[in-house]
Image (cartoon, rainbow, N blue to C red; front, side, top):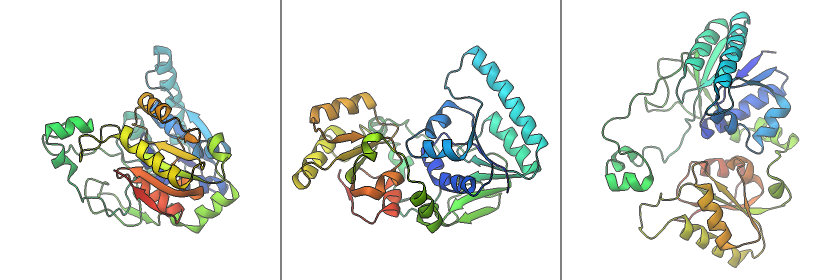
Length: 327
């Protein structure tokens, strides 16, 4: 058995891609430590389903779990990091997973050390997605009016290159990505089948059913609705989530009057505005859940989204039922 260290990403999709591998390694008996280097990374791992699994199968290591630590918190974080760095330096033969989202002084040092004393594996969010490259969003966002509506900064030039951690290899899914900015091409690629499609992950989920929100766990089946942003509807001036979600609920109720509707908002959705919207709809069978799309999918009658989201892959991979885009 090999000791495994997993350093979660601050990006949900990066964690969703690699967590099946981490959890399966832990369930196979490999001692697995989850190292939280930031508050955002900590929150990404506490969502329903994955949070309970990580608590059962892994050991947490808290370096920093808040976004704005106090002076004492910063001092303690440095002390904890020194102990962690010493552990990485003393041990041999371990495997450490770091994301390619970016690098911090913490991850740079740990990844370089792991590359010498064990194996430093960089994980990505890259997988085969036929939508990738269909729209040049950099070009779209050069229009200041559209950029403002999307809530994104206007793109004035080429994207700055991503700074990657040093490591031994890069973990990618399905096929090696073609775009140079997706992963560092100077490192070997470890191409693995997409975990969500593999029998070993389905077996893990069958023997370890995910614990989601209590209201979701209490339902036998539901309609899953995935929403991304307010103000992200560039095709019609009079269309936004307040219109689209209302239309979706009305349409579902025409077919299933009392089946629960589970609304899964992206982390970027304005929660206060969403709460006001759902209160105005006043449907007694509406449930809001932060569970990952792939874990919500298995019991869903169908999936509905207001606009394109990469979550459609996780949904279709987990359940062979219709996916409907409403926008």
